[in-house]
Length: 115
Image (cartoon, rainbow, N blue to C red):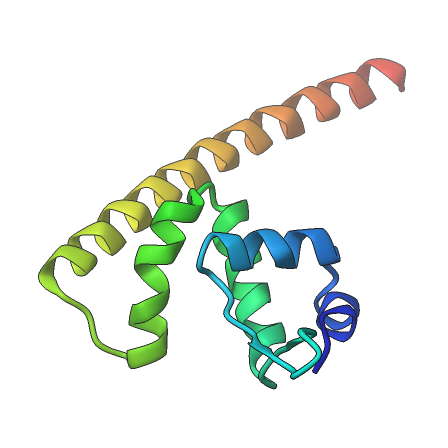
């Protein structure tokens, strides 16, 4: 699959895909003419990369994590990193949940004042 197709199907820009390649997160093959060709699983991989970025992981961490996804095995160091990232994300969820609850209270109070 060509870079434009991966971009279209994954909802990310061609520029982002090139960046992922530069960071070692996505590895296409090249045609004899030099065009990038991606495996069928590239769209799913890009989606996973996007999720990790959205969770706040830097590309360096994502690059450390992707071999775990590819092989299904981890080292003790990788598991520790995964546990730390999971704990960090869980804390963010708790903080966002608290902020959402507070906003709900404000919205409810504002609605009652209007009535």
